[in-house]
Image 1 (cartoon, rainbow, N blue to C red):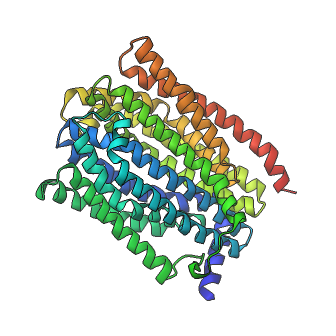
Image 2 (spheres, rainbow, N blue to C red; image 1 turned 135 degrees about the vertical axis):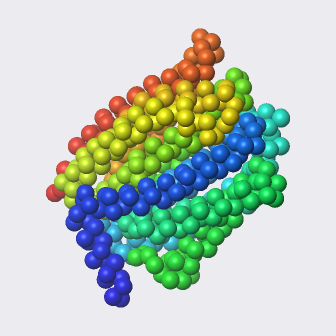
Image 3 (cartoon, one colour; image 1 turned 120 degrees about the horizontal axis):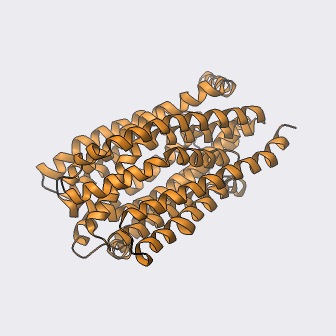
Length: 455
């Protein structure tokens, strides 16, 4: 009982100090994601030593992994927002119930996606434009990754539960441990054991299993979290399920649409060459570094806005919105300048092939221009999720990816017969459009919902 009271006091203190609390949440997220990004960079460096086809094999897998990430991260966002709102309203019973529902969701999603990946993997890779020369490597990588998929999905939901109650430190520490282990195992499986591309997948799978075991021990044995899991007495609740999915389903669909966008761009890029696909993959790994503060602050905003919305703290919602977005823009503006200037030197770590380097630099320098706009759009999407609005992110993502970026890229490269860099121009234009719509939607939502909450 004392432990629960201490956790409740900590949560109340968290609610009372918006600016400090945002960084209390954001810094561990940024650190954890930084460690994970370090892994993806090191992983790509190791894979890059196997050649351009190896990089392309991983690139063709990315839309599939983005789909898995989309479903788990999207529904996890719904779990985070739901638990945060219940805690803000001092409703621990429903907070516990939301956590239990998330475990059931993880089980269902894991079973469906793992089975689907193992049964239909080669067909999916062909649909995504994977060439026959690269297909054996791509399928080898995907098949091994499917073995660890379930563990990664469960871990994502466990992180979402802890995020909902404002605990980012444990997920950061566990993710850090898994990432360090992954980095250690990578060269062993890729080079020492000579597993090649599949070795990278084995390293990831083993680390995911260990991370899952740690989360289970901490949450179910040590009872580290504020919420409690009573799975023996679990009964599905339509109210709880709807509270999660009204944010989670649109968030998941947004990620799926982005996965579709990756698929479309890969298929268009492969018309230029597999080197173009590899360069896009390299660029994506590098720009994740600049995305770190955006993701950390945006994730913190979901939890904080959710708690303030549940507690009917309108002025604190407005304050943390202004504060969070302004800090995200300041940090990413600096990162954009650094990346723009250093891009030619950074990409050399991933590939020694001049064509891949040239295309990757072009991608990074174009995307760096709109990083501050991405900071605004992403932050707004997570703020709206915090107050229970999941559809805006989905609609804006559909407009950006399917309505603007995809058609423009096709028009530039297939109708006007422009070179590959015009695909990056399409991304820039779509980012500008999406940011304008995001700002307008946030203003509308605040005018409509927040005055009601303050009465």
